[in-house]
Amino acid sequence: MNTHHTEVEEHDATNAYQSLSETTGHDDPRWAFGTGIVEEAGAEITSPVPDGVDPADLAAYCLMLGDDALIYSHRLSEWVSNAPELEEEVALANTALDLLGQARVLLARAAHLHGGGATEDSLAYLRTDGEFRNVGLAELSDDLDFARAVVRLLLFSTWRLAVLHRLQDSADPVVAAVAAKGVKELTYHRDYAARWMLRLGDGTAESHRRAQDALDALWPYVGELFRTSDEERRLVDAGVAVDPAAVREEVDGVLDQVLERSTLTRPDRPFIGTIGGRSGRQGLHTEQLGHVLAEMQSLARQHPGATW
Image (cartoon, rainbow, N blue to C red; front, side, top):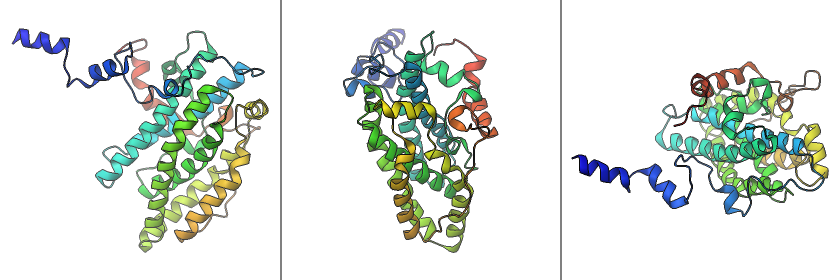
C-alpha cells in the first residue's frame, strides 16, 4: 500500500494538475485558465513597450481591459449551480473562464509595467475598489435573473468584441495577442446571448416582459462603454488602443438588429453620467463592486502571501 502510494506521487497520469504541468512545460505546478495566450502569439509579458508610449498609460489600459474581464467573470461564475439548465450552466461557466483567461494576461502585463513587485494576483486580490478600472456594467449583480444575465452578456460581448477586433492590430504585442484569441471567444459569447435574446423576446409574454425589464434596467450603463479616457486617447495616437467612441456605430447596429428580431424595444432612457468627470475608468464605482471584492478577495486577504 505504501509502495503504491509512493509510485502514484511520482507519476499519476490521472492527476490533472501534474499532467498539465508536464504537457505545457510550465515550471509552476499551479495551472489556471489563460496560460499560454501570449506565448502562442509569439509574444511575452515582458515585451518592450512600443516606442513613444508611456508605460503608465499602457499599464492603465491593461488594467481597464483586464478589470472588465475579471469582474464580469466573477459575476458570471455566480451562475454555477444556479442556472436554469445544465447546458446553460456550462455555457456561462465557460464564458467566465474565457474572460478570466483574458484578465490573467492583461493583469500580468500591467503588473510587469507597474514594477515594484506587483503580480497578477496582487492586482486582483489586494487593490481597493477605488483602484479598479472596470466599467460599471461589469460589476452589476444579475440577482439570479436569467433574462438579466442574457441581456448583460449581449451588451458586454457586443461591445468588447468590437473593441478587441480592432485591437488585433495593436502596437503592443501582448494586447494584440489577447485580442486575437479574445475575438474567437467573444464571437461565441455574443452569438450565445443573441440566440437567447430571440428566445426570450419573441417567446412567451412573461419571457418578453422579463427581457424588456432587464434591458431597461441595464441600458443606462451602456453610455459609459463609449466614453474615452485620457489614457485611451493618448494610446490611440500611439497605435496601441482603440477609441471606444469609434465602435459605437457598429455596436448600435448589432444591438438594433437583435432587438428588432427579438421584438424588444430600444430603451429611451438617459445614460448614467460622470461625477466630477469620473466613472469606472477613473475608479468611481457602484457599491456593488464592493460586494464583488468582499467575496473575491476574502481568501487572499485572510491568508496574505499563502501559496497553494
